Structures are given as structure tokens and as C-alpha cells.
Image (cartoon, rainbow, N blue to C red; front, top):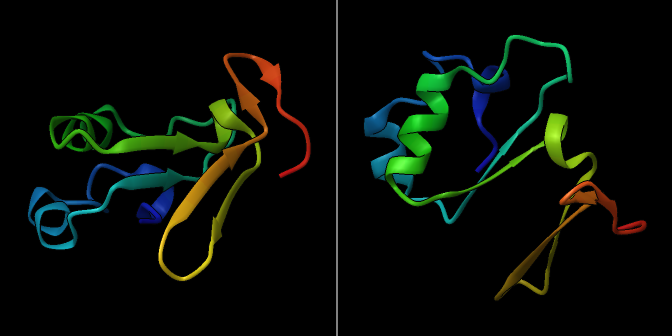
Amino acid sequence: MKVGNHGNNLSTSKEFIEKVSPMAAIITSGVDDNYPHSGTIKRLEQKDINIYRTDKNGIISIITDGKSLRILTQYDNNKWRGKP
């Protein structure tokens, strides 16, 4: 799921998360932004959703064959993983 409005506290409600039931959440935000909001992160973590953030993970790529998917990130534990 792509989290709305850079992870703004009002953009991803508990009800929406429960309806969508995502396995992963992608949040686009800059390194020095005030986003994502801690309330948004908390709601996602409470549902054990894997969170990927451009401010922490760099480039995020989702690869699928239509049945399964893989999520690749530019940075993993502060190490370059190469081009997705």
C-alpha cells in the first residue's frame, strides 16, 4: 500500500488499514521532513505491516509476476544493495 500524503497523521486511518489489510506500506518522504507522523507509523506497526520509507530505505522497487511480489530497497541497514 502506498501511504497517502507522506505519512500525514490524517491520511491513513485505522479503519482504512483494517479494510485494505496490506502486507507492506510504502511512505515517500524527504530526509529532513517532519513526515511520516509517529501516529501513522504506530498504526502500521500495530498491524505488523512491513514499513518501507524513502527517507530511510532510499529507492524502493516492487517486483511482481502477478502472483507474488518482492520489495527491494536501495539501502538496507545503511548498506548499498545496488540498483533494483
